[in-house]
Length: 622
Image 1 (tube, rainbow, N blue to C red):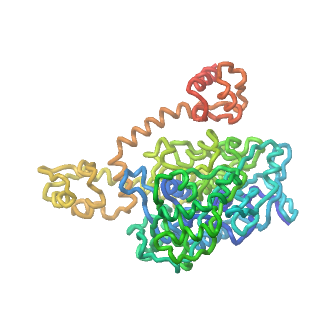
Image 2: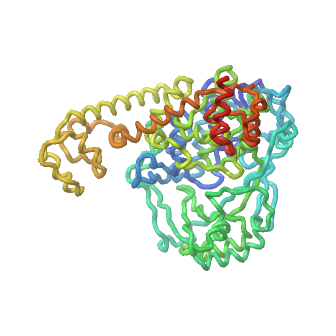
Protein backbone atom coordinates (compact mmCIF):
# COMPACT_ATOMS: atom_id res chain seq x y z
CA UNK A 1 0.00 0.00 0.00
CA UNK A 2 2.83 2.39 0.85
CA UNK A 3 6.08 2.85 -1.07
CA UNK A 4 9.33 3.43 0.76
CA UNK A 5 9.76 7.14 1.42
CA UNK A 6 12.95 9.12 1.69
CA UNK A 7 11.56 11.15 4.60
CA UNK A 8 8.54 10.71 6.86
CA UNK A 9 7.42 13.74 8.89
CA UNK A 10 5.30 12.94 11.95
CA UNK A 11 3.02 15.84 12.86
CA UNK A 12 1.66 18.71 10.75
CA UNK A 13 2.09 21.73 12.98
CA UNK A 14 4.41 24.58 12.11
CA UNK A 15 7.55 22.45 12.43
CA UNK A 16 6.09 19.52 10.51
CA UNK A 17 4.81 21.68 7.65
CA UNK A 18 8.15 23.42 7.14
CA UNK A 19 10.00 20.10 7.42
CA UNK A 20 7.79 18.43 4.81
CA UNK A 21 7.97 21.41 2.44
CA UNK A 22 11.76 21.82 2.58
CA UNK A 23 12.53 18.10 2.21
CA UNK A 24 10.07 17.74 -0.68
CA UNK A 25 11.22 20.89 -2.48
CA UNK A 26 14.80 19.63 -2.34
CA UNK A 27 13.71 16.52 -4.24
CA UNK A 28 13.13 13.79 -1.67
CA UNK A 29 9.93 11.71 -1.59
CA UNK A 30 8.12 12.81 1.59
CA UNK A 31 5.14 11.52 3.58
CA UNK A 32 3.48 13.88 6.06
CA UNK A 33 1.56 11.91 8.70
CA UNK A 34 -0.97 13.78 10.84
CA UNK A 35 -3.70 12.73 13.26
CA UNK A 36 -6.15 15.11 11.59
CA UNK A 37 -5.94 16.51 8.06
CA UNK A 38 -8.32 19.32 9.10
CA UNK A 39 -5.87 20.81 11.59
CA UNK A 40 -2.76 21.11 9.40
CA UNK A 41 -0.80 24.24 10.43
CA UNK A 42 -3.35 25.19 13.04
CA UNK A 43 -2.54 28.21 15.18
CA UNK A 44 -3.14 26.48 18.49
CA UNK A 45 -2.62 29.60 20.55
CA UNK A 46 -2.06 33.20 19.45
CA UNK A 47 -3.32 34.07 15.92
CA UNK A 48 -0.14 36.00 15.13
CA UNK A 49 3.30 35.53 13.60
CA UNK A 50 6.56 37.30 14.31
CA UNK A 51 7.31 39.82 17.03
CA UNK A 52 10.58 40.69 18.73
CA UNK A 53 13.29 38.29 17.41
CA UNK A 54 10.54 35.96 16.17
CA UNK A 55 9.92 38.25 13.20
CA UNK A 56 13.59 37.96 12.28
CA UNK A 57 13.22 34.17 12.34
CA UNK A 58 10.22 34.27 9.97
CA UNK A 59 12.20 36.44 7.54
CA UNK A 60 15.12 33.98 7.77
CA UNK A 61 12.79 31.08 7.04
CA UNK A 62 11.54 32.97 3.99
CA UNK A 63 15.05 33.86 2.83
CA UNK A 64 15.93 30.16 2.94
CA UNK A 65 12.91 29.22 0.82
CA UNK A 66 10.47 28.20 3.56
CA UNK A 67 6.73 28.90 3.45
CA UNK A 68 5.94 30.63 6.78
CA UNK A 69 6.59 34.16 5.53
CA UNK A 70 4.45 33.74 2.42
CA UNK A 71 1.59 32.17 4.40
CA UNK A 72 1.75 34.93 7.00
CA UNK A 73 1.63 37.65 4.34
CA UNK A 74 -1.31 36.06 2.54
CA UNK A 75 -3.38 35.64 5.72
CA UNK A 76 -2.61 38.78 7.72
CA UNK A 77 -5.30 40.91 9.34
CA UNK A 78 -2.85 43.54 10.55
CA UNK A 79 0.87 44.30 10.28
CA UNK A 80 3.19 46.24 12.57
CA UNK A 81 6.94 46.76 12.55
CA UNK A 82 7.84 46.73 16.25
CA UNK A 83 10.65 48.79 17.82
CA UNK A 84 10.88 51.33 14.99
CA UNK A 85 11.94 53.96 17.55
CA UNK A 86 15.09 51.90 18.21
CA UNK A 87 18.00 50.94 15.95
CA UNK A 88 17.40 48.61 12.97
CA UNK A 89 18.87 45.62 14.83
CA UNK A 90 15.74 45.76 17.01
CA UNK A 91 13.12 46.24 14.30
CA UNK A 92 10.83 43.20 14.33
CA UNK A 93 7.90 42.49 11.97
CA UNK A 94 4.68 41.10 13.46
CA UNK A 95 1.39 40.17 11.83
CA UNK A 96 -2.02 39.45 13.26
CA UNK A 97 -3.47 36.63 11.17
CA UNK A 98 -6.77 35.13 10.14
CA UNK A 99 -6.48 31.77 11.88
CA UNK A 100 -8.56 29.81 9.35
CA UNK A 101 -7.03 31.49 6.31
CA UNK A 102 -3.53 30.83 7.69
CA UNK A 103 -4.21 27.09 7.95
CA UNK A 104 -5.95 26.76 4.58
CA UNK A 105 -3.16 28.73 2.86
CA UNK A 106 -0.56 26.39 4.38
CA UNK A 107 -2.51 23.34 3.23
CA UNK A 108 -2.97 24.77 -0.27
CA UNK A 109 0.77 25.38 -0.59
CA UNK A 110 1.64 21.91 0.71
CA UNK A 111 -0.84 20.26 -1.66
CA UNK A 112 0.82 22.09 -4.56
CA UNK A 113 4.27 20.88 -3.50
CA UNK A 114 5.70 18.09 -5.63
CA UNK A 115 7.06 14.90 -3.99
CA UNK A 116 4.78 15.30 -0.95
CA UNK A 117 2.15 12.75 0.13
CA UNK A 118 -0.25 12.96 3.08
CA UNK A 119 -1.70 10.31 5.38
CA UNK A 120 -4.10 10.70 8.31
CA UNK A 121 -3.27 8.34 11.18
CA UNK A 122 -1.54 8.26 14.54
CA UNK A 123 2.03 7.02 14.90
CA UNK A 124 2.30 4.58 17.78
CA UNK A 125 5.89 3.39 17.30
CA UNK A 126 9.10 3.87 15.36
CA UNK A 127 10.76 1.11 13.39
CA UNK A 128 14.42 1.00 14.47
CA UNK A 129 17.12 -1.56 13.66
CA UNK A 130 20.73 -1.47 14.88
CA UNK A 131 20.26 2.14 16.07
CA UNK A 132 19.10 3.27 12.62
CA UNK A 133 15.56 4.50 11.91
CA UNK A 134 13.73 2.36 9.36
CA UNK A 135 10.25 3.88 9.39
CA UNK A 136 7.09 4.15 11.49
CA UNK A 137 4.20 2.00 12.70
CA UNK A 138 0.78 3.69 12.58
CA UNK A 139 -2.24 3.30 14.80
CA UNK A 140 -3.97 1.31 12.04
CA UNK A 141 -1.03 -1.09 11.99
CA UNK A 142 0.69 0.09 8.82
CA UNK A 143 4.47 -0.24 8.72
CA UNK A 144 5.81 2.51 6.46
CA UNK A 145 9.48 2.50 5.56
CA UNK A 146 11.68 5.57 5.24
CA UNK A 147 15.34 6.49 5.10
CA UNK A 148 14.80 9.32 7.60
CA UNK A 149 12.05 10.27 10.06
CA UNK A 150 11.36 13.70 11.58
CA UNK A 151 9.28 13.84 14.78
CA UNK A 152 7.38 17.12 15.24
CA UNK A 153 4.91 16.08 17.92
CA UNK A 154 4.20 19.49 19.48
CA UNK A 155 2.32 19.12 22.77
CA UNK A 156 0.80 15.75 21.86
CA UNK A 157 3.26 13.28 23.48
CA UNK A 158 1.36 12.08 26.58
CA UNK A 159 -0.36 15.47 26.71
CA UNK A 160 -2.63 16.23 29.67
CA UNK A 161 -5.01 19.22 29.65
CA UNK A 162 -5.87 21.02 32.90
CA UNK A 163 -8.84 23.32 33.60
CA UNK A 164 -9.11 23.91 37.33
CA UNK A 165 -9.44 20.58 39.08
CA UNK A 166 -10.42 18.83 35.84
CA UNK A 167 -7.76 17.06 33.81
CA UNK A 168 -7.90 14.79 30.80
CA UNK A 169 -5.63 13.45 28.08
CA UNK A 170 -5.23 15.59 24.97
CA UNK A 171 -2.68 17.18 22.70
CA UNK A 172 -4.90 20.19 22.12
CA UNK A 173 -8.43 20.95 23.30
CA UNK A 174 -10.86 18.37 21.83
CA UNK A 175 -7.97 16.40 20.27
CA UNK A 176 -6.51 13.18 21.66
CA UNK A 177 -2.90 12.88 22.75
CA UNK A 178 -0.22 10.55 21.37
CA UNK A 179 1.21 7.66 23.36
CA UNK A 180 3.88 5.07 22.78
CA UNK A 181 6.73 7.04 21.21
CA UNK A 182 8.09 8.48 24.46
CA UNK A 183 8.10 5.11 26.15
CA UNK A 184 9.88 3.47 23.21
CA UNK A 185 12.56 6.16 23.03
CA UNK A 186 13.17 6.07 26.79
CA UNK A 187 13.70 2.31 26.54
CA UNK A 188 16.32 2.99 23.88
CA UNK A 189 18.21 5.30 26.24
CA UNK A 190 16.72 8.74 25.56
CA UNK A 191 16.07 11.13 28.43
CA UNK A 192 12.59 12.69 28.50
CA UNK A 193 10.97 15.25 30.76
CA UNK A 194 7.80 17.32 31.07
CA UNK A 195 6.99 20.92 30.16
CA UNK A 196 3.78 22.90 30.27
CA UNK A 197 2.21 25.73 28.34
CA UNK A 198 -1.16 27.41 28.36
CA UNK A 199 -3.67 29.37 26.35
CA UNK A 200 -6.27 32.02 27.24
CA UNK A 201 -10.05 31.83 26.93
CA UNK A 202 -11.71 32.73 23.61
CA UNK A 203 -14.44 35.37 23.72
CA UNK A 204 -17.48 36.34 21.62
CA UNK A 205 -16.42 39.69 20.15
CA UNK A 206 -20.07 40.77 19.78
CA UNK A 207 -20.29 41.01 23.56
CA UNK A 208 -17.34 43.39 24.04
CA UNK A 209 -17.47 47.19 24.39
CA UNK A 210 -14.46 48.38 22.38
CA UNK A 211 -15.14 52.04 23.16
CA UNK A 212 -13.78 51.42 26.68
CA UNK A 213 -10.47 50.06 25.33
CA UNK A 214 -7.39 51.58 23.68
CA UNK A 215 -7.30 51.00 19.93
CA UNK A 216 -4.14 49.61 18.31
CA UNK A 217 -4.05 50.04 14.53
CA UNK A 218 -1.64 48.51 12.04
CA UNK A 219 1.11 50.33 10.13
CA UNK A 220 0.28 52.54 7.16
CA UNK A 221 3.11 50.88 5.21
CA UNK A 222 2.98 47.06 5.20
CA UNK A 223 6.36 45.51 4.48
CA UNK A 224 5.38 41.98 5.51
CA UNK A 225 7.70 38.98 5.88
CA UNK A 226 8.40 37.51 2.45
CA UNK A 227 11.11 38.80 0.12
CA UNK A 228 8.99 37.59 -2.79
CA UNK A 229 6.31 39.94 -4.22
CA UNK A 230 3.43 38.37 -2.27
CA UNK A 231 0.11 40.21 -2.43
CA UNK A 232 -0.67 41.56 1.03
CA UNK A 233 -3.64 43.15 2.74
CA UNK A 234 -4.37 46.76 1.84
CA UNK A 235 -3.56 49.12 4.69
CA UNK A 236 -7.16 50.35 4.89
CA UNK A 237 -8.54 46.81 5.31
CA UNK A 238 -6.51 46.01 8.42
CA UNK A 239 -8.50 45.08 11.51
CA UNK A 240 -7.63 46.89 14.74
CA UNK A 241 -6.54 45.24 17.95
CA UNK A 242 -7.38 46.71 21.35
CA UNK A 243 -5.75 47.03 24.77
CA UNK A 244 -7.42 46.76 28.16
CA UNK A 245 -6.10 46.02 31.64
CA UNK A 246 -6.69 43.82 34.64
CA UNK A 247 -7.30 45.53 37.99
CA UNK A 248 -7.00 44.79 41.69
CA UNK A 249 -10.65 43.66 41.55
CA UNK A 250 -9.83 41.22 38.74
CA UNK A 251 -6.84 39.94 40.73
CA UNK A 252 -8.94 39.33 43.84
CA UNK A 253 -11.42 37.26 41.82
CA UNK A 254 -8.63 35.20 40.29
CA UNK A 255 -7.02 34.58 43.69
CA UNK A 256 -10.26 32.88 44.80
CA UNK A 257 -9.40 30.02 42.48
CA UNK A 258 -5.72 29.63 43.36
CA UNK A 259 -6.46 26.69 45.66
CA UNK A 260 -7.97 24.90 42.65
CA UNK A 261 -5.25 25.91 40.19
CA UNK A 262 -3.28 22.90 38.94
CA UNK A 263 -0.16 25.07 38.92
CA UNK A 264 -0.43 26.13 42.58
CA UNK A 265 -1.60 22.71 43.77
CA UNK A 266 1.38 20.99 42.13
CA UNK A 267 -0.63 18.76 39.80
CA UNK A 268 1.37 19.97 36.79
CA UNK A 269 4.88 18.50 36.76
CA UNK A 270 6.51 20.51 33.97
CA UNK A 271 7.84 24.05 34.00
CA UNK A 272 6.03 26.69 31.96
CA UNK A 273 7.35 29.47 29.72
CA UNK A 274 9.07 32.12 31.86
CA UNK A 275 8.37 34.90 29.35
CA UNK A 276 4.74 34.08 28.68
CA UNK A 277 3.37 33.35 32.16
CA UNK A 278 -0.23 32.61 33.05
CA UNK A 279 -2.32 35.41 34.55
CA UNK A 280 -2.27 33.66 37.93
CA UNK A 281 1.52 33.39 37.73
CA UNK A 282 1.78 37.12 36.93
CA UNK A 283 -0.35 38.00 39.96
CA UNK A 284 1.76 35.75 42.18
CA UNK A 285 5.19 36.82 40.88
CA UNK A 286 4.43 40.52 40.48
CA UNK A 287 2.29 41.08 43.56
CA UNK A 288 3.28 44.76 43.66
CA UNK A 289 1.48 45.49 40.36
CA UNK A 290 -2.16 46.46 40.48
CA UNK A 291 -2.81 45.83 36.78
CA UNK A 292 -1.50 43.90 33.76
CA UNK A 293 -1.90 44.73 30.07
CA UNK A 294 -4.30 42.60 28.03
CA UNK A 295 -4.34 42.59 24.21
CA UNK A 296 -7.71 41.97 22.58
CA UNK A 297 -7.02 40.36 19.20
CA UNK A 298 -9.38 39.31 16.38
CA UNK A 299 -9.07 35.72 15.11
CA UNK A 300 -10.25 36.34 11.55
CA UNK A 301 -12.16 38.43 9.02
CA UNK A 302 -15.17 36.12 9.10
CA UNK A 303 -15.45 35.28 12.78
CA UNK A 304 -16.34 37.17 15.95
CA UNK A 305 -13.99 35.01 18.01
CA UNK A 306 -11.49 37.03 20.07
CA UNK A 307 -8.13 35.96 21.53
CA UNK A 308 -7.41 37.49 24.96
CA UNK A 309 -3.64 37.82 24.80
CA UNK A 310 -2.08 38.06 28.27
CA UNK A 311 -4.84 36.14 30.07
CA UNK A 312 -3.46 32.60 29.72
CA UNK A 313 -4.90 30.53 32.56
CA UNK A 314 -5.83 27.09 33.83
CA UNK A 315 -8.10 28.30 36.64
CA UNK A 316 -11.62 26.87 37.00
CA UNK A 317 -13.92 27.98 34.22
CA UNK A 318 -16.29 29.92 36.47
CA UNK A 319 -13.39 31.90 37.97
CA UNK A 320 -12.10 32.76 34.50
CA UNK A 321 -15.56 33.96 33.49
CA UNK A 322 -16.10 36.09 36.60
CA UNK A 323 -12.65 37.70 36.37
CA UNK A 324 -12.97 38.49 32.66
CA UNK A 325 -16.20 40.38 33.25
CA UNK A 326 -14.44 42.70 35.72
CA UNK A 327 -12.17 44.09 32.97
CA UNK A 328 -13.05 47.30 31.10
CA UNK A 329 -14.98 46.47 27.95
CA UNK A 330 -15.62 42.88 29.09
CA UNK A 331 -18.56 43.61 31.40
CA UNK A 332 -20.98 41.59 29.23
CA UNK A 333 -18.46 39.16 27.75
CA UNK A 334 -19.51 35.67 26.74
CA UNK A 335 -16.94 32.91 26.56
CA UNK A 336 -16.59 30.54 23.61
CA UNK A 337 -14.18 28.30 25.50
CA UNK A 338 -12.09 28.53 28.68
CA UNK A 339 -8.34 28.83 28.86
CA UNK A 340 -6.38 25.73 29.79
CA UNK A 341 -2.89 24.47 30.56
CA UNK A 342 -1.30 21.47 28.91
CA UNK A 343 1.68 19.43 30.06
CA UNK A 344 3.54 17.20 27.64
CA UNK A 345 6.72 15.20 27.07
CA UNK A 346 9.84 16.69 25.53
CA UNK A 347 13.36 15.43 25.01
CA UNK A 348 16.18 17.66 26.31
CA UNK A 349 17.85 18.89 23.11
CA UNK A 350 21.41 18.19 24.28
CA UNK A 351 20.65 14.71 22.86
CA UNK A 352 20.75 16.16 19.33
CA UNK A 353 23.42 17.12 16.83
CA UNK A 354 23.39 20.61 15.30
CA UNK A 355 21.62 19.07 12.30
CA UNK A 356 18.75 18.16 14.71
CA UNK A 357 19.50 14.48 14.16
CA UNK A 358 19.48 12.46 17.37
CA UNK A 359 22.81 11.21 18.65
CA UNK A 360 21.44 7.80 19.64
CA UNK A 361 19.48 6.88 16.49
CA UNK A 362 20.83 7.60 13.01
CA UNK A 363 18.49 9.39 10.58
CA UNK A 364 15.98 10.27 13.32
CA UNK A 365 15.37 14.01 13.68
CA UNK A 366 13.42 16.06 16.25
CA UNK A 367 11.95 19.52 15.57
CA UNK A 368 9.73 21.94 17.47
CA UNK A 369 8.28 21.63 20.96
CA UNK A 370 9.67 18.11 21.33
CA UNK A 371 13.02 19.94 21.73
CA UNK A 372 11.74 22.20 24.50
CA UNK A 373 10.94 25.35 22.51
CA UNK A 374 7.77 27.44 22.56
CA UNK A 375 6.31 29.49 19.72
CA UNK A 376 5.31 28.92 16.11
CA UNK A 377 8.40 30.66 14.73
CA UNK A 378 10.89 28.66 16.81
CA UNK A 379 9.15 25.44 15.76
CA UNK A 380 8.95 26.39 12.08
CA UNK A 381 12.64 27.19 11.73
CA UNK A 382 13.60 23.90 13.37
CA UNK A 383 11.28 22.07 10.99
CA UNK A 384 12.87 23.80 8.02
CA UNK A 385 16.39 22.86 9.19
CA UNK A 386 15.39 19.29 10.04
CA UNK A 387 13.84 18.89 6.58
CA UNK A 388 16.97 20.21 4.89
CA UNK A 389 19.24 18.00 6.97
CA UNK A 390 17.10 14.89 6.50
CA UNK A 391 17.53 15.47 2.76
CA UNK A 392 21.27 15.99 3.21
CA UNK A 393 21.50 12.73 5.14
CA UNK A 394 19.50 10.80 2.57
CA UNK A 395 21.82 11.94 -0.24
CA UNK A 396 24.87 11.36 1.98
CA UNK A 397 25.95 15.01 2.07
CA UNK A 398 27.31 17.20 4.87
CA UNK A 399 24.71 18.70 7.23
CA UNK A 400 23.56 22.26 6.64
CA UNK A 401 24.34 24.22 9.80
CA UNK A 402 23.95 27.94 10.38
CA UNK A 403 26.40 29.62 12.75
CA UNK A 404 25.54 32.12 15.46
CA UNK A 405 26.80 35.05 13.39
CA UNK A 406 24.78 33.93 10.34
CA UNK A 407 21.21 33.64 11.65
CA UNK A 408 18.92 33.74 14.65
CA UNK A 409 18.14 30.17 13.60
CA UNK A 410 21.78 29.34 14.25
CA UNK A 411 21.62 30.97 17.68
CA UNK A 412 18.46 29.06 18.60
CA UNK A 413 19.76 25.64 17.58
CA UNK A 414 23.19 26.20 19.14
CA UNK A 415 21.58 27.33 22.41
CA UNK A 416 19.42 24.20 22.48
CA UNK A 417 22.21 21.78 21.64
CA UNK A 418 24.91 23.36 23.81
CA UNK A 419 22.96 24.57 26.83
CA UNK A 420 19.79 22.50 26.79
CA UNK A 421 16.65 23.87 28.40
CA UNK A 422 14.53 22.94 31.38
CA UNK A 423 11.80 25.45 30.51
CA UNK A 424 10.15 26.34 27.19
CA UNK A 425 12.79 28.20 25.14
CA UNK A 426 11.76 31.43 23.47
CA UNK A 427 13.93 33.54 21.16
CA UNK A 428 14.89 37.12 22.11
CA UNK A 429 17.20 39.60 20.41
CA UNK A 430 19.30 39.56 23.59
CA UNK A 431 20.24 35.92 22.97
CA UNK A 432 22.20 36.90 19.84
CA UNK A 433 25.72 38.29 20.21
CA UNK A 434 25.66 39.63 16.65
CA UNK A 435 22.23 41.17 16.38
CA UNK A 436 23.51 44.17 14.37
CA UNK A 437 24.46 41.63 11.69
CA UNK A 438 21.28 39.55 12.11
CA UNK A 439 18.69 42.16 11.18
CA UNK A 440 15.27 41.46 9.70
CA UNK A 441 16.03 43.60 6.64
CA UNK A 442 19.08 41.62 5.47
CA UNK A 443 18.05 37.99 6.03
CA UNK A 444 17.92 37.50 2.25
CA UNK A 445 21.44 38.84 1.80
CA UNK A 446 22.69 36.57 4.60
CA UNK A 447 20.96 33.33 3.71
CA UNK A 448 19.41 33.07 0.25
CA UNK A 449 22.63 32.27 -1.59
CA UNK A 450 23.43 29.47 0.89
CA UNK A 451 19.98 27.97 0.32
CA UNK A 452 20.18 28.47 -3.44
CA UNK A 453 23.39 26.42 -3.52
CA UNK A 454 21.53 23.63 -1.69
CA UNK A 455 18.76 23.73 -4.27
CA UNK A 456 15.98 25.08 -2.01
CA UNK A 457 15.82 28.85 -2.60
CA UNK A 458 14.50 29.62 -6.09
CA UNK A 459 16.21 31.33 -9.00
CA UNK A 460 13.79 34.23 -8.52
CA UNK A 461 14.98 34.73 -4.96
CA UNK A 462 18.61 34.65 -6.06
CA UNK A 463 18.00 37.17 -8.83
CA UNK A 464 16.19 39.46 -6.36
CA UNK A 465 19.15 39.63 -3.99
CA UNK A 466 21.58 40.30 -6.83
CA UNK A 467 19.39 43.23 -7.92
CA UNK A 468 19.14 44.43 -4.31
CA UNK A 469 22.92 44.23 -3.76
CA UNK A 470 23.59 46.11 -7.00
CA UNK A 471 21.02 48.76 -6.06
CA UNK A 472 22.52 49.32 -2.61
CA UNK A 473 25.98 49.85 -4.09
CA UNK A 474 24.62 52.26 -6.71
CA UNK A 475 22.77 54.31 -4.09
CA UNK A 476 25.85 54.58 -1.88
CA UNK A 477 27.93 55.69 -4.87
CA UNK A 478 25.39 58.36 -5.88
CA UNK A 479 25.26 59.72 -2.31
CA UNK A 480 29.05 59.81 -2.15
CA UNK A 481 29.32 61.77 -5.39
CA UNK A 482 26.44 64.22 -5.21
CA UNK A 483 26.94 67.53 -3.39
CA UNK A 484 23.91 69.50 -2.17
CA UNK A 485 23.77 73.29 -2.02
CA UNK A 486 22.25 75.02 1.07
CA UNK A 487 19.26 76.25 -0.93
CA UNK A 488 18.53 72.67 -2.03
CA UNK A 489 18.47 71.15 1.42
CA UNK A 490 17.90 73.78 4.15
CA UNK A 491 14.11 73.86 3.85
CA UNK A 492 14.04 70.13 4.52
CA UNK A 493 16.50 70.43 7.42
CA UNK A 494 14.46 73.21 9.01
CA UNK A 495 11.28 71.11 8.79
CA UNK A 496 12.91 68.30 10.80
CA UNK A 497 14.61 70.73 13.25
CA UNK A 498 18.10 69.81 12.08
CA UNK A 499 20.95 72.31 11.72
CA UNK A 500 21.03 74.07 8.37
CA UNK A 501 24.23 74.15 6.26
CA UNK A 502 26.18 77.22 5.05
CA UNK A 503 28.07 75.57 2.23
CA UNK A 504 27.54 72.63 -0.09
CA UNK A 505 27.82 69.20 1.48
CA UNK A 506 27.92 65.61 0.30
CA UNK A 507 24.54 63.88 0.53
CA UNK A 508 26.23 60.94 2.25
CA UNK A 509 27.47 63.17 5.08
CA UNK A 510 24.01 64.65 5.61
CA UNK A 511 22.50 61.17 5.79
CA UNK A 512 24.77 60.32 8.73
CA UNK A 513 22.70 62.68 10.90
CA UNK A 514 20.42 60.60 13.16
CA UNK A 515 17.35 62.75 12.38
CA UNK A 516 17.78 62.56 8.59
CA UNK A 517 15.98 59.85 6.60
CA UNK A 518 17.05 58.82 3.11
CA UNK A 519 13.46 58.25 2.04
CA UNK A 520 12.55 61.78 3.20
CA UNK A 521 15.60 63.23 1.44
CA UNK A 522 14.54 61.59 -1.81
CA UNK A 523 11.02 62.99 -1.49
CA UNK A 524 12.08 66.51 -0.40
CA UNK A 525 15.23 67.16 -2.45
CA UNK A 526 14.72 67.21 -6.26
CA UNK A 527 18.38 66.47 -7.04
CA UNK A 528 18.14 63.17 -5.14
CA UNK A 529 14.64 62.39 -6.34
CA UNK A 530 15.80 62.51 -9.95
CA UNK A 531 18.47 59.87 -9.33
CA UNK A 532 16.96 57.61 -6.66
CA UNK A 533 13.14 57.62 -6.92
CA UNK A 534 12.98 54.43 -9.01
CA UNK A 535 14.74 52.20 -6.44
CA UNK A 536 12.56 49.88 -4.34
CA UNK A 537 11.73 50.87 -0.75
CA UNK A 538 13.64 47.91 0.72
CA UNK A 539 16.74 48.70 -1.35
CA UNK A 540 16.72 52.32 -0.16
CA UNK A 541 16.25 51.15 3.44
CA UNK A 542 19.12 48.66 3.12
CA UNK A 543 21.46 51.34 1.73
CA UNK A 544 20.54 53.75 4.54
CA UNK A 545 21.17 51.16 7.26
CA UNK A 546 24.51 50.18 5.74
CA UNK A 547 25.60 53.84 5.63
CA UNK A 548 24.36 54.93 9.06
CA UNK A 549 25.54 51.84 10.94
CA UNK A 550 28.63 51.01 8.89
CA UNK A 551 31.09 51.20 11.78
CA UNK A 552 28.89 49.13 14.13
CA UNK A 553 28.44 46.49 11.44
CA UNK A 554 32.19 46.38 10.78
CA UNK A 555 32.94 45.96 14.49
CA UNK A 556 30.57 43.00 14.79
CA UNK A 557 32.00 41.44 11.65
CA UNK A 558 35.52 41.79 13.06
CA UNK A 559 34.42 40.18 16.34
CA UNK A 560 32.67 37.35 14.48
CA UNK A 561 35.81 36.73 12.43
CA UNK A 562 37.98 36.60 15.58
CA UNK A 563 35.62 34.11 17.21
CA UNK A 564 35.46 32.00 14.05
CA UNK A 565 38.90 30.62 14.93
CA UNK A 566 37.28 28.79 17.84
CA UNK A 567 34.26 27.81 15.72
CA UNK A 568 36.51 26.33 13.04
CA UNK A 569 38.50 24.26 15.55
CA UNK A 570 36.64 20.97 15.11
CA UNK A 571 36.61 18.34 17.87
CA UNK A 572 36.56 14.73 16.56
CA UNK A 573 33.43 12.77 17.58
CA UNK A 574 35.73 10.03 18.88
CA UNK A 575 37.73 12.40 21.12
CA UNK A 576 38.45 10.72 24.48
CA UNK A 577 37.76 13.27 27.22
CA UNK A 578 38.56 10.77 29.99
CA UNK A 579 42.29 11.11 29.31
CA UNK A 580 42.22 14.83 30.23
CA UNK A 581 42.70 14.55 33.99
CA UNK A 582 42.92 18.32 34.51
CA UNK A 583 39.29 18.96 33.46
CA UNK A 584 36.78 19.81 36.18
CA UNK A 585 34.32 17.04 36.98
CA UNK A 586 31.38 19.08 35.62
CA UNK A 587 33.18 19.93 32.36
CA UNK A 588 34.13 16.27 31.84
CA UNK A 589 30.52 15.20 32.38
CA UNK A 590 29.12 17.88 30.04
CA UNK A 591 31.69 17.26 27.28
CA UNK A 592 30.97 13.52 27.29
CA UNK A 593 27.22 14.08 27.23
CA UNK A 594 26.98 16.87 24.65
CA UNK A 595 30.04 16.01 22.53
CA UNK A 596 30.63 19.57 21.25
CA UNK A 597 31.48 19.90 17.54
CA UNK A 598 33.89 22.80 18.02
CA UNK A 599 35.91 24.59 20.70
CA UNK A 600 33.50 27.50 20.34
CA UNK A 601 30.53 25.30 21.20
CA UNK A 602 32.48 23.74 24.08
CA UNK A 603 32.90 27.20 25.62
CA UNK A 604 29.14 27.88 25.49
CA UNK A 605 28.11 24.78 27.44
CA UNK A 606 26.59 25.66 30.81
CA UNK A 607 28.97 24.86 33.66
CA UNK A 608 32.11 24.85 31.50
CA UNK A 609 34.76 27.38 32.56
CA UNK A 610 37.27 29.16 30.26
CA UNK A 611 40.05 27.18 31.95
CA UNK A 612 38.38 23.91 30.87
CA UNK A 613 38.34 25.14 27.25
CA UNK A 614 42.01 26.15 27.46
CA UNK A 615 42.91 22.68 28.77
CA UNK A 616 40.90 21.12 25.94
CA UNK A 617 42.73 23.32 23.41
CA UNK A 618 46.09 22.12 24.74
CA UNK A 619 45.14 18.45 24.41
CA UNK A 620 43.67 18.96 20.94
CA UNK A 621 46.93 20.63 19.93
CA UNK A 622 48.80 17.56 21.06
